Length: 363
Image 1 (cartoon, rainbow, N blue to C red):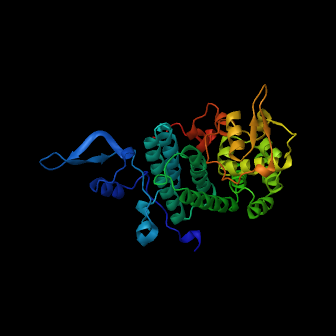
Image 2 (cartoon, rainbow, N blue to C red):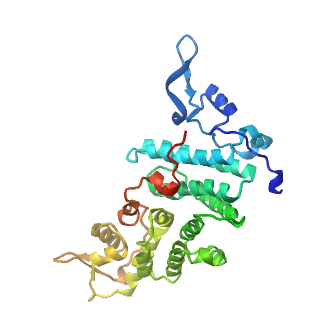
Image 3 (spheres, rainbow, N blue to C red):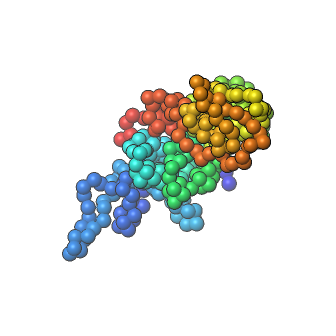
């Protein structure tokens, strides 16, 4: 079906009035959507339900089995409203997260993740492409790429890695379609590089990138991402980790899912390459090569794999491939050098949305 037959949204609020009333009466409002003090009291015992705040309520995701109900124009938000909704979710809701409180983090993540799915659903139903669609998807992808780093300690009940990864891939696919429509896209090269980093080593992704216009291919973001993919495919781990230091915070988050496995492969390669009872590899130098935050983390990685760490005036590692243990890569952990230091003074919300795209007044 062509875009001319697509339904056009008319809703100018983040949540259609009909849904807001229904969820209020059914007690299905999220804590981020209710008025601070006012409650609806019913019955002799004073039981009641929270009242929705029209400025905070955001349309929730519904499975497409409802058929025509998803295509009611008054329930579909306009492109400008969708952009405003993404901004609100990242700059108002996510910016209020207490990262040290896993309960608070889980509530914010599940809320923002669900509401961004609903945003993309409105986008798909209306077949919005071009610059309007790209703006919405770029903001959504900023959150989806950073979130796995930030919610890495949440249990499976709160963070489903497979579902999250599926949403990332679908968002990228839709964003690439927006770019194909032609026009000027300020962040096209940036998001092409993010796709290359997220899909590290995927030959189809690399091939499609090499078919892009030359001005996109020659952009520094894209060149760096292609060089990292080459180093990965060539098993040139020293070069790969040197290049990783050049990534910005959002790019580092896109690569984060590959970091543990890349370190494991790099260390195993070095164990085989420097295996000798007469060879001592400086632990400090190994820490820098693997871009780890401390020598103690490096020493732990080595001992887990059966290698000997020799302490003294300087600490060394004795690599022996005959002692190598086959272990699973370490679980994703906090990364100060490769991720957090790159954030600088920016907030995570600003990293996700892109500081140049922040709207300071959302009212």
